[in-house]
Length: 280
Ligand SMILES: [Fe+2]
Image (cartoon, rainbow, N blue to C red):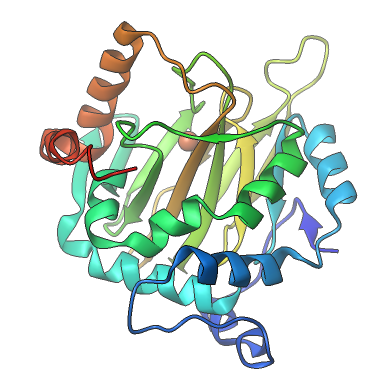
């Protein structure tokens, strides 16, 4: 059983562990993986998880759970390759007192990293998450630049301060954070139960190793990423899923402005609007 809430101790070498060579579905590294290939590989990776125990942990921790590497090494390797290839596309942001770092939006991922787009829609992955939260999940609409995005921590001090992943949707929005590269001392610090009346907040901290994941209700988990140290690098991937993709027009505008200023820049968002017809 690999549910956990404490510190992880897995380095990049884990990506090359035995699981990718002992008969599990394996992806070609020379081309974008198709959805059936991703589904087969992810399905094999999550098949041995104890769904009931993980669900219980998610509920006990106020809609939060952290898992040691569950993505098969071949999938994680593809994410690393895509993150590397997208380095020239990174948009840097600095909001004094809140965040510093780089991001690549789903619109750019749709153009250049279709494996990530396929992973976002992976049926075994979504089934795992639905089991955790006990709700039917939907992918975000094509105009949401945050539906899936890469975060790059490449310069000393890159970080994001304490915040919630506030949902602008009519329903709940769940965040999945996937570890891609981690040669850093960065940690996800969090506080559980902060919005539950009569329940004392519970602090915690976890490293998200390559292939590992953290899943939570964005409106419930107070969290931050601690600053990057010298000569360090970290890349993580975020997927957002919703219970109701409806959003009032004013909120969409507010959400887009926040994404443009704090994450992706106006260039990526404008490109996204032009390409919406292709980004299903
Ligand atoms: Fe966040």
